[in-house]
Image (tube, rainbow, N blue to C red; front, side):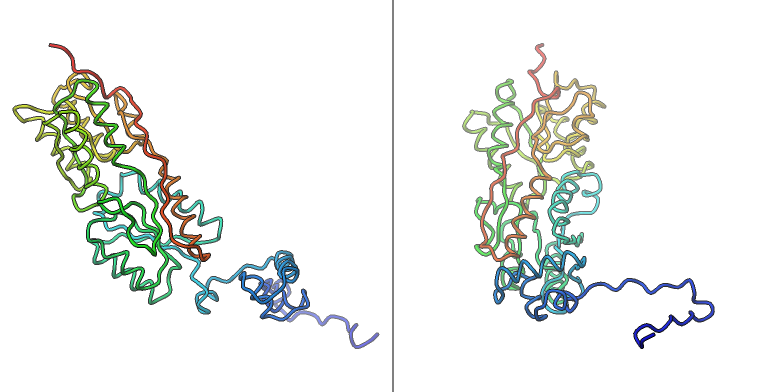
Length: 364
């Protein structure tokens, strides 16, 4: 029996059933198996120059055989990234619990990010100043590799801040005048102006001349564009009575505005709501007042959801691929992280789907 063939010593009493946990493979293990240096392994796994294509393929094959995965903590400590993307919403919390748009957006974001083993860090804050504070803190703490930004508005300080920090970002939406937020930041946007114009033409064709738009928050760029689009299309069609009323997007304010405008001497014959929650609340108000939809009042939701399809009659709505917007935004952010140049990407314009809530006014 040689020195390398000694019989195993018995395990200490009380420890016979304990097993040493499997050790996670390291770059040193890969280097030893592939016959290269640890620095060559680092270059190969992080797509950096300095190794041949053949070495890069061999190292990656060995890494896959060993089941190696990059350590998030190690990446953060080495400055290589946090393996996390951030999303901050500066919205009243009561408007987020029932609105489906952001849930669908997040599902699209996560679908792309998870494929790259990236997490999503989500925060809700009170206002834009608090949102900027979060970005500064995340940058200082190296908490995120990049961010998705929503709700651009006039005089928006966030793009300039993010550019100064060097924090990669994708903005969903454009400024009120339809331009990109910042040349160093990618933009994903849809033509809300054309979408609102389609609604105006649809209602005009049905004979509606008194139209109220129950809009969202006045400071948001997309709210401003929708208001301007309705006014421009109404002027083109010769409809003087079309107007917009801003809200906080909540069902409560949607219902309150609906009650108020229906109590006017010349109430609207059609109401357009900036989201599904307000549209459903408005439909409930119309029902309580004994109004027939669409015989007495036509209703349109700017965003579609199962809520819109569950009402009676189902609501005419603009249908968009919101998860697709999220997937597109996440893809553009990953491109920035991989070294691509910032750009603007237009997603399909929301399509007006006509259902039972819009029609010609009942004669007599």
